[in-house]
Image (cartoon, rainbow, N blue to C red; front, side, top):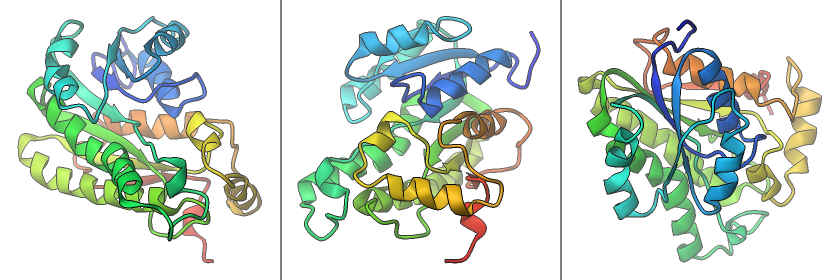
Length: 255
């Protein structure tokens, strides 16, 4: 077996369709020697069908990252397929329509709390659920969308991503003594299922297409997936608490 991730055992969440960033991560990881286990939520049969499109069919475990029983059982379910984990990919986010699309001032706490639980707290919850399977050199990688700015229509999801970025730094602090890294990839806008649920998403598309120094392909998940795979590999052994931008350079520009 050869490749950047040869011999690595990875748990990858968040595949909904083959346009998901997580799908590209799983595909690249397998092509680079990794053994992959997936999680799915909701329409599990759909995730299982998508999993068959990978170079090697991957097992799918049902996981609701907000359900304590699912999280408590996760390590045991993963052990049915691999004897441990070297890496975990968090690609989980959700916000009710009321927290997006310019409704920042009107969104109620119940809906905001749901967005924060699914999109922010689940990063820590997934990490701790997987800790019994992980050892020195392990890597946890999540996906964010630049939370240093206030974006039109993104609203409370932007707040949730800011919390995710902070949570990753705190995981880096608390898991470093166990030799486990926590990093995020900040991807530019991509036409995924998640993006389609954001009212006014075309505003992001227009801005990136016009201004990103390297240009930006809204339908190409591979650049972000490559960054995730690199952070899962042994090539960043002393990097943790970091956010790697994969956005054509857009984040480096002034207003």
